[in-house]
Image (cartoon, rainbow, N blue to C red):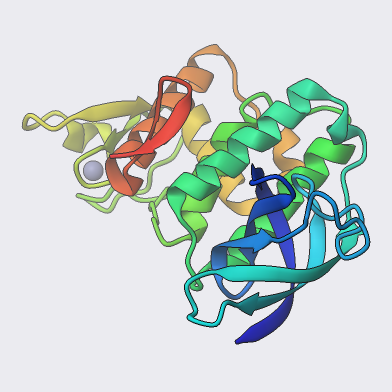
Length: 250
Ligand SMILES: [Zn+2]
């Protein structure tokens, strides 16, 4: 089995003296790992390829018994610009890449995930001003695109429109749905408040390309509500949480 594809490098590790282990995102296979034998020495077969967040074209083949994949050669399509030496921005990129790996991306949805990650890297590389909650924007957008839908315009119970800045709505954690304040008074449900500002921010992050996420305005309490809702939604429904400096699957 052999294939050639344009992929995005998400993790690189050393394996034995001269060999390298690479985890990348393929548009048709999702997250994939492969060895690059001689990768740390063979500069000819992998010229400038095996660095984090490079977009590369690779030829990959399976081992005889099919137990692992090996990169045969690669060519750099797009590397990083200022992101490579801008540590705060690089850290944000690593955070997004780690979340994506904890999330787990299979063949289905791989194309969308690759497109989103590439757009976020471009924003980190070229954007003058970054949205303050960029990692959270990335997490919820990825979840939305990978099938964890959330109706942001209607109450899940009475079906009334959720509208107006003063109208408070709530994220009903156990169902991953939003309900209005009239429907929120009953029962022992675990509810996270969502004011108009946080709700509109969710709508914008779901719709706008990352390059326009700067338009998402959030002030003090809106930031908190947005962050708690995203973390709660992701932990409860996707099963991924931030724990002691890394993402873990629950
Ligand atoms: Zn309602």
